[in-house]
Amino acid sequence: MSLAPSARADGPLALADVGAFRGLPAALAAFFDTRPHADLAPELVDELSRLVLGGGKRVRPTFAWWGWRAAGGTPDGPEAETTVRALVALELLQGCAVVHDDVMDRSTTRRGRPAAHVRFAAHHQRARWAGDGRLYGDSAAILVGDLALAWADDALVTAGLDGASLARAWVPWQAMRTEMMAGQHLDLLACARREESLERTLRVARFKTAAYTVERPLHLGAALAGAPADLVDALREFGRDIGVAFQLRDDLLGVFGDSSTTGKPVGDDLREGKRTPLMAVAIGLARAAGRTDAVRLLHSCLDGPQVTDQVVADVRELLHDLGAVGAVEEQIAVLTASALHALDRARMTGQARAALRHLATVVTARRS
Image: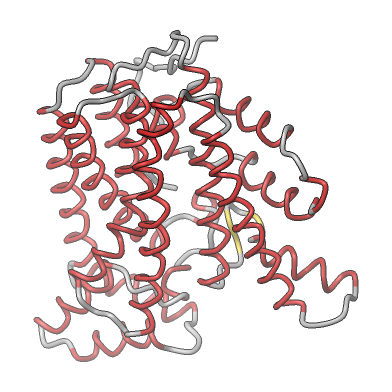
């Protein structure tokens, strides 16, 4: 089976081009087809399979694949198929994260479709079941996320890895799961404490997104291939910076993104009152400029009980006027340059280095 990525010579590579190891969709489908006891909770399994098999950018397994390739993994070698089966775990972990995140953020859509808790609540209402439909929707969605987390472990340990490879992979896998949960809690705390510190919002980005999106997937892939410590360190350094830049881009898209490409309403992050580095930068700039009116407007967006379309429009304009958007764009460029410098110092195959450079550009300049 050939698992080599496709490439285009006529322009920048899309994320799918760089990561199109063709075995992943089949491995995902096969995993769901072979789950024991899935018939015990078909509604939960259907929702999870719709989320995991229904698309997405496959960012995490793509970085893990190229971490594996950077450490000497070969796409036509005997370990390639087993490696791809192991990377199914990352898509399931992401399924857990997004379902739980949507419940906590009260997000109504995911990838242009109703979020899991919304779908379950709507079904409760249509069926005229007893009890609170919203509570039922939240509870069922939490169970979907829990199932995804349990199955993520299953995917890794049943992929067919030899004992030594599994033991090496278990180190970043354990760290990734805990860091993901800790990052989500830091995000909750930031909102509850009305956090405005740029340093602390960047810490949320580091653990909520960077660690489990880029840094640890690279670490996982490299560990599967038995990478030396210096290569693991370089990949993790690259991953930390690109992961934070990825989140900063996500923050900009959450405010200025086109709903037809992001799959979420325009300005959704503003309506949810997210304490992002973008908003921390804006508040800092407004205070430095003595713009009390701007500080009040930003706070009304973060703390207000209901954020209107007009408030969203005014805040979007203000973020440009204050220079917050430009400052975040500059930070994305600085982080990307730092990451590429770490990559250039690492000893790895030329193809893996080129692919990771492309990925760095794609995920930090994306529009969805």
